Length: 607
Image (tube, rainbow, N blue to C red; front, top):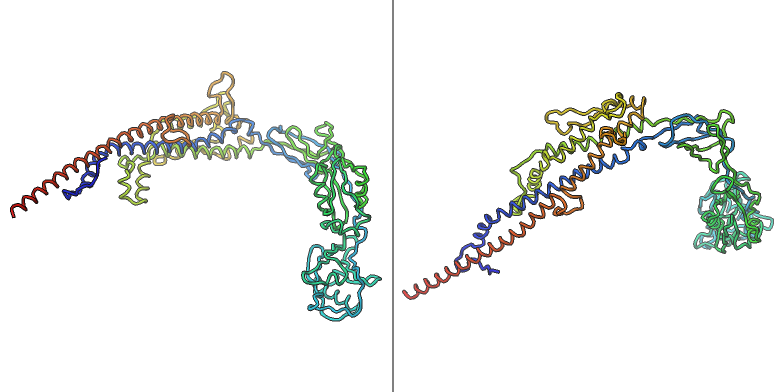
């Protein structure tokens, strides 16, 4: 390595002189770097086209086969009795369905769970009761049908009747009149009763407010309820039930459900519903009854309780009925053929019937299945949009202007430019990299040829896109981007679809017969193959999106790799050249320094 102490003896700007000399030496390296950048940009331009081309091809992957177009619509003459839907495999036509009986699940219910609905205190009232905020015995909380409010009794000294009246007034102030009645029992204990329909009285609870002893002073317990509380621990609800719950488990449909001392009715029902018993258990707090229903319908749907003593205790405690309606099958006649079905949803020949009610035993319900012409039109319209988008991109790349004076910038050139100027310059430099590209031109011509093609094995009046109102745009000067794009005459296309939907579909999807010609293929089959072939060709030229730009398995990548090798080799030579210049200038600098020293000595001798 040459030591670079430039210009110490001579005072010359050696660095600047070497830099100017190297600028000329670096010209071949700059040209290689610019060529390398152009190839990288070209590879990326190819890959960008390939992304669009792959998306276009993939959109045709299923559409090129006739089965994916076979959408149908179906209608029922009475959807309150039979609802219908259909899939593509359903044949167009009319069906008649007679429903004699719906499929039923197994079910059973209980009697009233609550043996006595009451919210009674346990301590008799006495005269001379002192109620005050200071005594912390004037505030409590009441929940009525899920709505919770704070009740505040007016301060004072009360006799029995006066205290009842003061509590009633406080409750009315919180909930309004005629919502809750406050009274006493024969033993002078206090009671609360919700008012309303005697058959559907709402739930009523009394709760302690933190810091106050009101609830216990009045003879109640915290969270005491009027009716059975399905969310409370069962041990706190014992007085509400018709008998003592001693069961630690019960059996339903062969599944053992365990009961613990922390269970509520809600938690027990959750265990049942999440078990393999295949049933749903539900408690209705309004009717105060438990219902059990099977999750399935049909004659295999059963509810069977265990015969053990523990199960019997559970059933008796909650008044569960052992008289069970077991499941049964639906009885249906479709197009004259009788059948029994475990479900009320039946699928036959691509048509799904959802049974809602029994039908007239003679006329039944009429179901019409038709080809979904709107879906066919939408599929074609969507394809045309994607085709035009792809063709527009190809046309743009093929006709993109070339600015030959705008070469990729070197690092030194970028140092003297702003970011905006660099971006604008590089946009010009990238333009036209695929101008008149042979691969893209072949694809464009292939796509246009397919759009104009005639499917030779189809009827002459319905064997091309033109026959159904799809034509290509002409070339217009200064509008090359839209040249060859497809246009749809909506009225003609919809008319063709309505008259012969399958005939229209075949133009797009017709399959080549054994030994047939390429012209036998439907338009989408041809487009798919053209796109697929071009994708492979571009990958061979520029690689995939995940490949490095110097991947030697593709044409441009091999060129980039070779240039990179040349750049490394040339850079080594330039480094050696630069060292040579510094060495030469160093020797010159030393010689000048020695000469200056001799001159100084001679001048000293002459003085």
